[in-house]
Amino acid sequence: MQSDTTSKSAPASTKIRSSQELGEFIRQYRTSQKILQADIVGLANTGNRFIVDLEKGKPTLQLQKVLDVLDLIGLEVIVQRKGSR
Image (cartoon, rainbow, N blue to C red):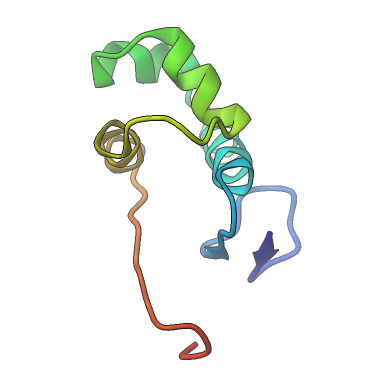
């Protein structure tokens, strides 16, 4: 995972190359914002297992549910051509 900052909190943007990197980024961001997994479960209308699997980087999670959780905690996915940054 390559980030734009070196702080212990989640960076503003990061290149994500695997589901494990995405899960780690989400966990770092969630904890830096003092959001509990239980908070996401309640607001996203999903099970705790889904949030645990997401943060562990399970590669077979439903994309729409992942996008919904990202939106809920204030993150978004931006797709761009490689090398255009």
